Image (cartoon, rainbow, N blue to C red; front, side):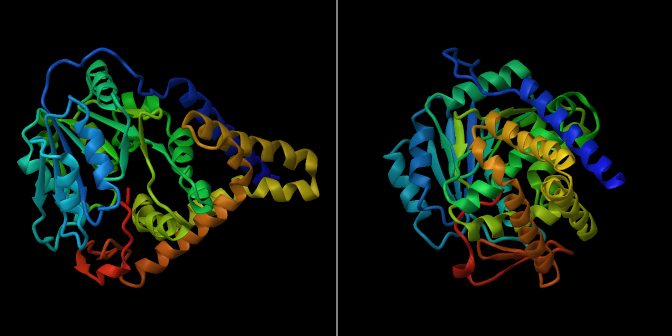
Amino acid sequence: MLLILFITLALLTVSLIALLNALTFPRLRPTTLHPQPSSLSVLIPARNEAHVIAETVRALLAQPEVTELLILDDQSTDDTAVVARAAAQGDPRLRVLAGQPLPAEWLGKNWACHQLSQVATGDCLLFSDADVRWQPSSLRALLDHFRRTRAHLLTVWPTQITETWGERLVVPLMALAIQAYLPVLATHHAPSPAFAAAMGQCLLFRRVAYDRIGGHARVKDNIVEDVALARAVKSAGLRLRAADGNGLIACRMYRNWGEVRDGFAKNILAGHGNQPLLLVLSTLFHWLVFIGPWLLIAGDWRMGLPLTALGVLVRALTAAVTRQRVRDALLMPASVMLMTVIAAQSLGWRYRGGPQWKGRTFTAESRRTRSVDSHSANSASLR
């Protein structure tokens, strides 16, 4: 009986948070207003991104808000730099930088972003990924929201594009975690860094705020650097704001189950404070809350069915407000099982030398990096 009470209270809590966020979570809106004049540097670290970089370059340079577009070719083994330059068609706002060798104490993406920040000249710094898709006027909407909220850091969750079953069952769980577990009003107004949240696919800083917190040098060895930067902003008493991309900014993070598994496994343990026990407890929690009620139906349908419906509704609500497939909420137990596989891989990596991504291995204890066979790395960007 105590277990059923726990499941009930947990589902009611996440339901209330999801409902509150559905009503209060800001969304980017198209606007015809031009933001106040300011210089915007768009900064993109790119490692083996030749398959997506051309579309990104064209979409960004088509928007007049871009003062400069800086792409750091992070020692790619493909034609990332060549493709990027060709896509710009001579636009002087594009500069492709050659990445310097990775220092032992840095993680790859953080080092790339740091190098970009050292070259950028804009008053506003937009850190993004090579596979983020920018709709026409998306930057205008982003800068308008930035101005209206007077944010020092505005982070946006792009609308996630999912096609294969592995993507559909796992990637939308990011929306569930943000929309159902963390009230955005606390992210915006509670002073504690514990309420900080961020998405590395879109981080828009005021340059003075970025420099004040120490930039990426402050989080050089942190796998979840986006959240660490957001916590640094709140710790400094600066204004953190979050918004949903609302289709204006989108991203397809991965393209198959293998990429989904490895991408999520890379940072799921870091997201749990590098505490294996906490990850195990989190996994058990999701089994209890989102699979347990389905099992209860066989024994007592009058108890199990309402709890099952509540879990499905929470998942469906978070999907609806973030433009995901609502019907996939019925497959939440399968999603939890896949996340269990991901958690197991993450724990296995921890005790076998650390997660591997984009030709590098990240050790769990020291978080130092070393090279591995570049052909074993996926080409998608990890968030």
